[in-house]
Length: 151
Image (cartoon, rainbow, N blue to C red; front, side, top):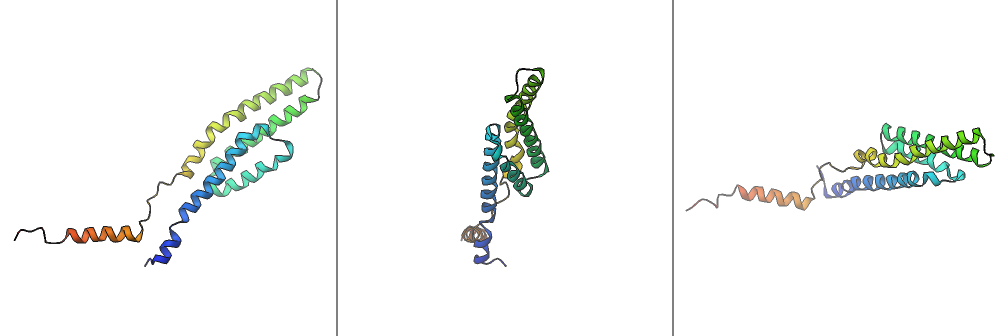
């Protein structure tokens, strides 16, 4: 039997989960959005995001974040390598590698919301409040009344 105390405790749980998911999603989105401009000492933030994603989203999201992170590392590594080099064929190779990785990194944020959408939807039925339940039962009870018969 569900008492009003149990009902009150159980009702906000999906809302808490949803708030937690939206908070995490916003954090992930910020990392994805600013990932191109990340400084080297802030790279640990990506590991934190990937670790939290394992518990909130499915394998496809964590795999996506892994590939995105690898592309970001390739881009920043190539960019750092050509900064200090004189014009040479090797420098040109690093410039083109950084540019290719940049194109991949910039394409990913378009895909990220679609990947997370199935986990963010709250399409399950809402549990009715006790007053809604009583109101519906009262309507049902009144519908069985025989006051509608002519006398």
